[in-house]
Length: 367
Image (cartoon, rainbow, N blue to C red):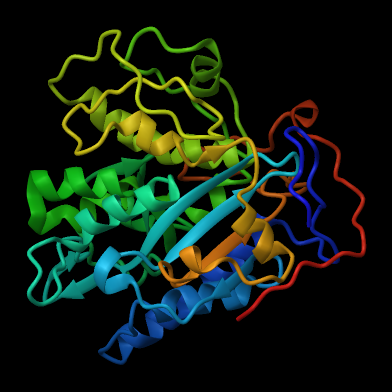
């Protein structure tokens, strides 16, 4: 597959009418059931198992390929996740899978895990490893259903719904910067704090609720970036914005100035090249880190996955696999309002593009 020119449309996913939202919902439901069964049996499966269950169930609508490389020990990273829109805009994350676990009476996620003879935490290695692919670092959290989390103690709510009773958050994603902040403030309760800020994976690419604006702390933003933060988004842009949202909220609560400042180093192909170099109290410039994965064109190694080819070794040697969510901006034609997560019914009809006619090309995938 030849590299597309900027602005040209990608070949659309064919042969399946299931939306990314629905495919991920099916995968999340399968993981929830497995986690409930394991908890009842007094045990829990390994963290590598959860992504396999999720992706196998969501396939073939969600494409994925798994590699033999075992880089988790060094990088703290399992998978690259990419949401790809029909116009070629895309958003990538380097993610680590984590399970919300009950230890005695305390719920936790081991963000501060260290391997033997290594003083670095898995969290710090994950943030550093994301530099290789010029994407943000994140976690995909496997948290079970409301019954699984019934003893979780969190006094915060989501639109008047108790945090632990939220729908669809059994498989959720959160920025590594949110986890980093939670560990720094209260390492013992960092897992519950990060869970509160996590966003259901099945929701973020194809929302049917309102998309609240983000008011940045930094001044002097480019107009395109300002519009992105304040206006309604969808697809890969929506994913980027929703993962940034809790990071920006944390930044607002930090006592550090954010006036007009120098620009962060640009990432070739990034949708926003002029981004403030604002650290706040994070270990990296948070806006630059979160938005560098939002691209105007699909990386060649992602195209390889969609075409059934093996990506180059500089990729396969450093991640356990790649997940691709094609047509991430495909509209949802029928979906209920989302009680408990700010749902407000369907997006305005004129906001969504008309569905594209499918064709016969079916990119390959591997289990």
